[in-house]
Image 1 (spheres, one colour):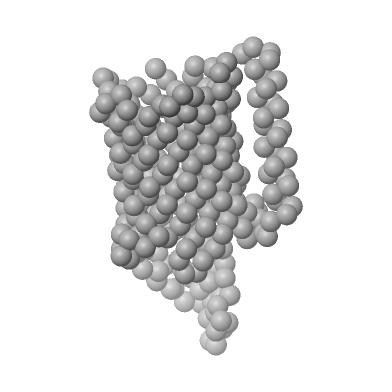
Image 2 (cartoon, rainbow, N blue to C red):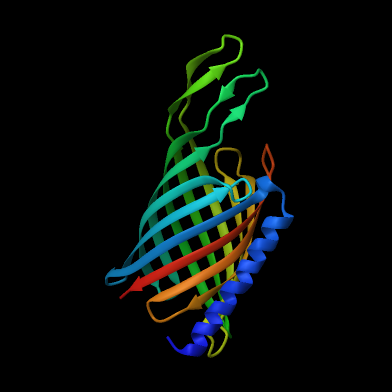
Length: 251
């Protein structure tokens, strides 16, 4: 890596670190999240390519684990501007302990989830901009689990069964990348709308993201970003996310 590129990367990382620290100090504790992920991309054969991704996410003022994920996927380039993809994700979601209104105490527990995605992405280049529209169908199955809860009236413990649940979501994302001439840094923005297919196509969430990719070399790149999540449903919540991503591409 050339020295000037190394210093540019360090400068970008410092800027995003300052943004993260300012965010952590100014936002309410339950609205902050940190998302990190590692990506491995590799060509398989012809127009097919494979992907692997590992995620770790925090919540509650960056103090508690929210979930971790493992994703395996495959992509197929139909046309130079059109790509199809499918993936499977295993998610282990963490829930903090909670005191209920009747005095019962539900301790912290983990709930496994299985997710399948199928998507179609079209992208077009206009001058230095790349505009990409992705439509993704997302099916998630939350597995049933038992939790050993404390019941206040009886001063005793009992198993509480949490039922299995599934959701069907259509995620529509519009992304714009800007290619800075002779620079390893490419900024981007995107907006993504989550529509519930289980509830009359209701808009569940909107995610707004701004970030930048830094290409270290042909195989290695990093991305830093900020996301604002606005959940429209009940209960409604808003969250602020600082994210860091590393990608290794094998030819």
